[in-house]
Image (cartoon, rainbow, N blue to C red):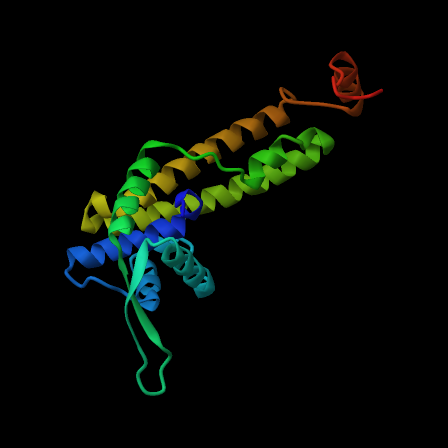
Length: 211
C-alpha cells in the first residue's frame, strides 16, 4: 500500500514519538501517552491533538499501511484497554523519508485567508479595510503571545523552541503584510468601484465565456 496518502502532520508526529520511544529504549507507546507528551511539551501549537478521535484514526491508518504494529494490548481492572504501538521496519524508513521531505520541501496549502483576499473586489473597500484592521489586532495579539512562549522556552535552549520561532516569524510577516495592505486601502492606493470592475472585465473578457 502506498504511504503517500497517509502523510499528515499528526501522522508524522506519531511516527516521531515512536522513533523517540526507540531512542529511549522503550520501544512502544500508547495513544494516550502520545497525546499527553504533545500537549505537555507545547507541541500542540503545531500538532492538532485536541480531538483524541483524530489521533486514533491516524494510528489506524498508519497501522493499516504497515508503518506501525501492535506491540502489546491489555486491560487493567476498571480501565479502558491500552494498546502499545511500535514502528515497523517500513515505518522507520518512511518516518525518515517524511522528515527529510518535510524539512526540504514547502507544501502548498490552501488556507481560507488568501482565498478570501482573491475575492475582496466583491466587497466594499471600507468593509474590507475594517476586517483587515481587526485581523491586524488579532495578529498583534498572537505575535505577543508567541513572543512570550519563545522567551519562556529559551531557558531550555533554542533547539526546543524552533517551531515556535517559526510561528512567530510567519505571524510577524503576515502582520507586516496586512498592515501594508490596510495602509494602501486607507490612502486609496488600492481601490475599486463597481464601475472600474465592470470596465476591467470588459477589457479582459473570460475566454471561456460563451457570451
